[in-house]
Image 1: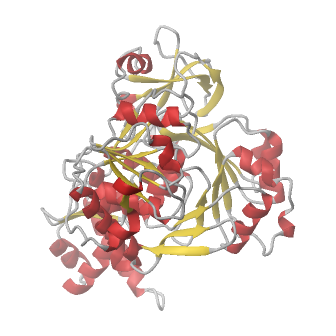
Image 2: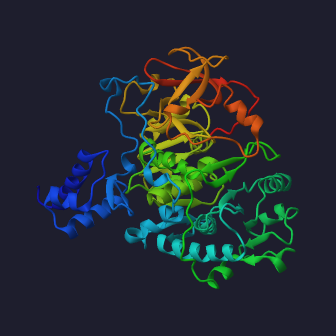
Image 3: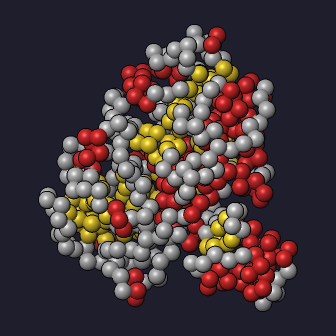
Length: 529
């Protein structure tokens, strides 16, 4: 081996042994025998590879197999494998997200402690420029203490806990505490009216509310003597003070909850409603098995690396912000960067330069706003290596500004709240043909799309029709039904359980690229991510 690369070579040797044995799992003894390494060295390297998800370890059988990092890897060129490019090889669901005993809080925090205990799990920047951090170690401690508070209040596995909080340390602690006891995290938009908040609380049967003093007033009509209410300490006074638990005071007064509740792969851990209605409509229970899709998106679709500074600007009240701004970073051990709004030009440029953001996700409206400024006026040069946007078709001037002014690739994407992001297109300034591309991109591994006519028959390449997920060929597709809403569920599966109708029209060309045409019907209004 080259000088200084011995450990890397040994780790690769372990990976080679496991790869050659696949799909059969191997024992530590097999690794030792095949590589000639000592037991201590082989175990240390294997443990590191497990932490980085290159290997997976089953503690019951004591066997190693390839980890979820490789879930999205298929043949380098599908045509050479005899596959149609419209049918990208789909990975199986990663093993750690299947079964009946999934320790969610361990996956999102505790497993990172061995390597990242002192590193930030969250960085918070205020409008005034004050920065605070929450380490993985402190997140584990505070969330364990608050989990004890929730458990003592009678919150149990499967109960819904509504969270009305702005971006910040309390939001992350609360979410992880909810998942420590096996409950369901239900975030609400800070801009919801009292009527919209009350409708969602009633429809979901929320057992507890965690909020700040300003936002809890929007839930006051729902709150009874049986509702557990926890307020973030502050200067404001309201009529709930006498019966509300104080967040930080209760945390410091409680011992950590040592146990971590487990979920089944079909158990929900998030609940949301479509934000476009005042009424509580299209209730969405996201199951734990969706983590396979979330992790693949973070690692493969937008390529979040260990050395990235990742900033997802989305609000934590809607699915894109929840999936990829809160859960995704915790899942892969990446710091969450939270910044208070408003996201004007000066605020955005300051954050980009101050934290040396390398991987940015933003809405098209935010990028449009930034074009009013000049990146050269920032306090320090930007370090961005790619920008990802989603939510609407991209105007060419937005594409040009990112690729020419910032001189970095731009990823545009398509998805829904019921699927997450499933299609993406990269506009790379190093590719001279990128400006001629008109599609929304290629289908992500783990999903297969098809185009149907009005009777549900499959249409050939290049013919416009109803875009639908081919469920049998989409192992990472997780949606099955809306909460207590059989009518809208049937609309999604109007041609049977094999096809999930996205609600949009489009076509898939002969090169496997998806072209979006428009809304198929207004019978179901869905939130684009």
